Length: 391
Ligand code: COS
Image 1 (cartoon, rainbow, N blue to C red):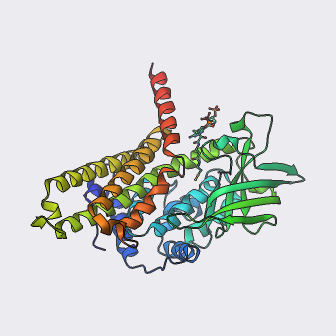
Image 2: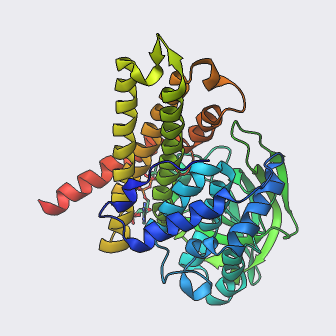
Image 3: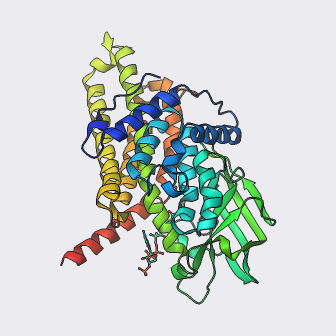
């Protein structure tokens, strides 16, 4: 593809290293020819290729094969934006390595991190994050999967739903209830479960409108050692939320990537499409729609890179700005891409057209890693918290 304009890379939230990373990734991804007919095969191939090219080093911290001491949000964002603009599965494969290994990097013990994180960074192991259940999606603290103490380890029983990389992952970071007496969010603990653990099986493969590996997992008497526990008992819910705080902003970046590609495709189409004795781009109504798309794209990107910059540079709790970025960017991207389809006319809904694919690719982003409604709730709570702290 010809690349969409990337003048946003000159914004003050980013520096020369981010521009170089984005350019390197854009050059690299444009040369990749991975067939996406079978999502499992394609994802495995993308993980290997991203690992070999060094990009997965940005998904884990430095002591275990990563590029920086802690995961750099702006690196995650420029990479996800760039990959998403080219191939949804390339972005998915990159993103899930980070999310899937995030709780391990934050709370696993040293030997466990040494065993898995370098392989995540090199693309030799595939990671997955397993929080949601059939009856616990937005209300994550309502999860019922159980972990029971047995000897020197734990026995896991229950189900996990909507698990990305389910079926191809080498390990799952799983959240299970360990204390019924505690408040719902205080009785949960994180565990690393290798995919080869007896009693773990793929109960259902789930097909979605933008195909990627996705499954319901069943755990029936899975026994793992205590050394596979992620953090202290009872701290699993906060661990899951801290993991999501890091990666939610990168979902926003993927949305920006899809939307930037859609605008780029639409600008090219509008100049070429003959209409009313001129071109589509000569129509004032089309110009106004393109103006709305460009404005919304910059708003989405500003929210995204502000949040990433704040986490990288200012530090502290970035829950609110990350949620704003995810809410704002995914909702705006959906609107931008819908307008792109509209301006493409009938061609916009023809199966196989780029904007048709983007229309399907962007939809799940408003749902996974915290639906838009959850982000609104989080933003409201964080805004109240901020106001109370300054009173
Ligand atoms: N960082 C650290 N700790 C956090 C945290 C964060 N971002 N968010 C919550 N916690 C802690 C809280 O501090 C609280 O402990 P204290 O009472 O000691 O302060 C505890 O966790 C419970 O938090 P809260 O009261 O906010 O829990 P709720 O059940 O009300 O959470 C929402 C509600 C909706 C915000 C939460 O369930 C959520 O984010 N749901 C979406 C889950 C999701 O993204 N699912 C998709 C999975 S990946 S595809």
